[in-house]
Every structure is written in C-alpha cells, then in structure tokens.
Length: 148
Length: 148
Image 1 (cartoon, rainbow over the protein chains, first blue to last red):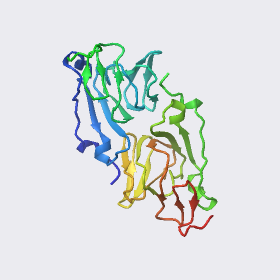
Image 2: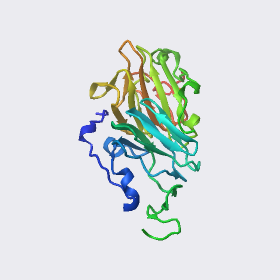
Image 3: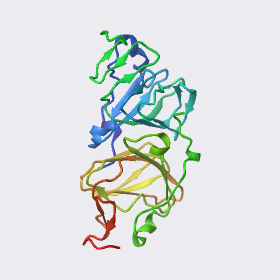
Image 4: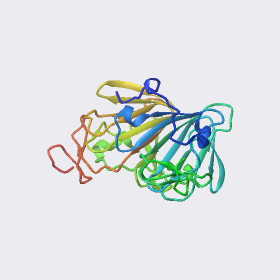
C-alpha cells in the first residue's frame, strides 16, 4: 500500500556530528521515508524539531540539491540573506553548490514538522559558522583537516 | 532567498494527454518548483486539484520513483489495493517499476493541495485502465502502438 504509516517507521535523533556540535540537533527526530517506501532515486525525511532544536548546523552541499516543505508549527530559516519564518505549506529550495549556508531553527514552544528531500551526500558539505567540514568520504573533520 | 514565493511561480493545467483522456486532469493546476528554485537533481511540483480533478490517469512508471505529501484538503488514492483517503500530513511512496497503478482523486468540494516529488520521465509509463501508453520517447500512443 503506497500510503506510509508513519507510526511504524522508526524515529531517530542520531547524528554523526562530533559532540561539541551535536547539541543543536539533539531535538531533531527524523524518519527515513525513502527506505520505508521503497524509494531509491531520492531521499525523503519526515522531520520533527522539538522546541529549541535545529535541522542541522548551518551548511551547504557542494553536490546535492535539497528541498523542504513545512507541515506543522513554525521554523526560522537562517541563511546568508537573513532570517525568514516558514509556516505550514511554505516551501524552500537549496540548490547544490550555491554557497548559501542554511538551517531551520525551531524557536517556538511547539513541535515543528517538515518534509526534507535530497540525496545521500557524496560530496563536500560546508559549514560557514563552525570549525567543521564533511568530506566526500562521509567523515567530519576540522577545517584544517584534523580529526575531532 | 531559498523560500519560494508560490504566488510568483506560474501555474498551469497543461497536459500531454490526448483529448479523450484529458478531461480528468483539466482541474489539476501545478507549479514546477524545481526550475523556480534552481533544483536539477529531482523534480518537485506543487499541485492543486480542483473538486473532481485527478492527479493523472492511473499509472505506474517503469523507471521513476514518485512521492507525495498532502498539504490541504483530501484526496482518494486509488491503486491495486483499493481506495485510501489522504489527509494533510499524509505521505505516499510509489517505487518505480512496482506495477501498481495509482492516482489521486479529489472527490470533495474543496481544493486539495499536495507536493509531488519525482524525476522527469525517461522510461515507459503504464496506464492499466485506459488504452494509452507513454513511451520512453515521451510520446503518448495507444497500446497497440498506433497514434492518437
């Protein structure tokens, strides 16, 4: 049956971030809908941000497009152009290699829910605000290349 | 700015269907968000189904995954397993080559709005209920190969 039963899909707040940068995403709970639905050509995540949680550290991908559509609550989209409130029904697109670091932050007191579409990162991901870099090998390092 | 201003993105009800199968999608109004947002790795459509409109003729793709998330109103998802009502927040996945023809039908009296994610069709699309076939060349023909 094509309709997904979200309640049966495992929810995780796991992150590959090193400890010093992981606190912002501790309240980010996501379900991977692609594997659950048998999709392989793109990734889809159903994401809940608890109050105070961020979608990620502010970042941009060298080789992967991203798209989000808001389902519930509010998030503040922070990027190089400033801050923009996203409400249910709002859509945002993040083209690969645009150099515009972005993050969604839940600054409210209720959960914020959105769908994120992308592809598994196979290229560098840049974090303008912190001393961290994700290489094409999938490993997080400091910007000078040293290990955490 | 990553947030998309939907009001400035052109809306179309154009279809490539031959006249005899086009009436069901006359009330399907869509915006292509991928080009508007600079995305090239997958396609995203913001779709409004007017009362009575269908998302498509019931179909399945040989080579393209599809995903939908409901934003407003209700749609009836019709596929080989029967009929399923989709409401705001509901998600459905349609893996390529699954042989399960699917369509969303707005049987209500208010607009239904959803986001559809996919890729431009470059493979055959099969229509189990009607005498129509979409070839990998992007042309609609009858199932015996004859032209409309």
